[in-house]
Length: 620
Ligand code: ADP
Ligand code: MG
Image 1: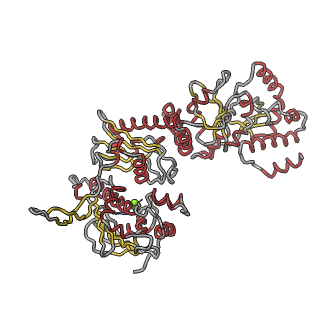
Image 2: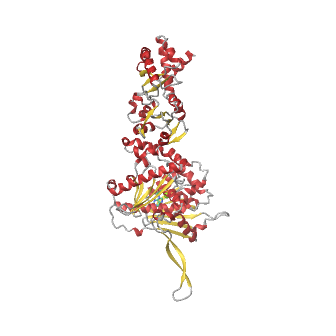
Image 3: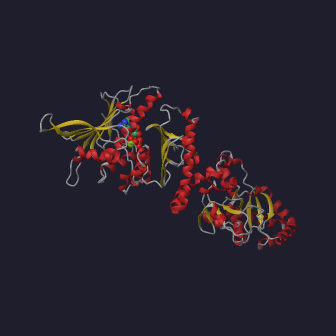
């Protein structure tokens, strides 16, 4: 039987496990038990899906068997089992969720301490075993056995393992001078490990233990061997809130949702009465590695009276809170409820409605009481919230608006909309914003100068969704949002306005000549009073900023959106004063230079960069 090699990425993690001098290697047992529990869940769920009522839950069990003579530790479950090809697929690669994230975040894994905090999965077995043998039998498939001594690869072949489920035999490493593996053959040690890591596993974890008892009718003692259930099987969320420590909440989160960091916030909700349910919700600190891919599954785990019926119930979480992890357990739900039924379930939508309010409250509490943590959270997930404001024609904008933070040009930090409005001077009527690719670019945006000179703050928008979110919000506390690119910013006094009108009137023939020179490269050429030091800038239709066009271009069918803009000139700029005296050819050259400059400042590519460079040199 020829050996197959582990995939390169798996090998790395495997090496790390085999050579780990890691003191928390005891977590291997937790990993194997949680896999066993998952496997039983799958078998139970599949039976329900097939409509097999009366599936006897009590038959499911996870068994631990230490054998000192053989120096093996065996973990057996009667879960779904694996076929030969599944053994190959699941244990030969680490394309699996948790382990993959580990690999991505810690490619070189200098920080081995992370392992203790994180579900590293099946390969953890190699921290304590020199050889691992996995017998497995999936219903309706030929049983098979997977075997590996680590680095030199693995084999998969048929076998005659009869019971449905999986049996994993670990041949423990030899005890060294400094390290003992024999401890994992001691029943008291195994018992305490299971209490520590796997107490809430819902299926009984059984082991044969010795107990001494009084002989019947005599004073003598005898030793008996009997089966003992090692876990209390009470899920964490069913325990009393004040009996749960912060660390227990965090550990549960890390195990269940495969994060190696503690959550930013934990919500444990118990409701009774009309609607009775328990929810345990977590707000993560960072997005999981697949958060922005289509592989990411949002939703909460759904339990009916302690039995998981769905892993990702989307109906429980609105899309704008898709970063929330957690579970809901309700005694009133039917076990074999189908996905279609869920969508129309009144009970479920009432729970979802309560939860979203609780989540909002918690976010706003963090914002008030733990500002730094909230800002970190917002850096990780703010985009999702802003998208929530914009999405569905702004249906949720009122609900979400106070969660938003934007960068304040004046304060040089993130502010809420309320903080912005509270700090507005009397004379300021609008909430100003400026959009660009980077903060540095936005701060230097020529259009922003005059607004800033008035002493007004400007929200700096750097994410694609920002401007769309503000446009759909329209206003906050009746103060309209206004882009600094908007042609009628209305910053001027009556006198200044009149002066501007006169200038515009006088400029008409010149603007007409420039427009003719530029042809269809611009929508129009106009004067603007928005600029101070810059000679020219660009603006879209109806005050839409160039940034919005850039975003629209990226959208499906966006390629058709023309990137042609108004060229707005600053009449107070010395260059402008020169334009009137130029002959047609020179005017054309200057106009093209001004247009090119405005494009560069707006972060747009030039049509003909070489021509631009030549023109600049000619001038120099
Ligand atoms: P994860 O549990 O994060 O998926 P693991 O490395 O722990 O990753 O396990 C890899 C895969 O191997 C599991 O997803 C599962 O499909 C399979 N597996 C592991 N142990 C068992 C088991 N006892 N019964 C059935 N399948 C198992
Ligand atoms: Mg696992």
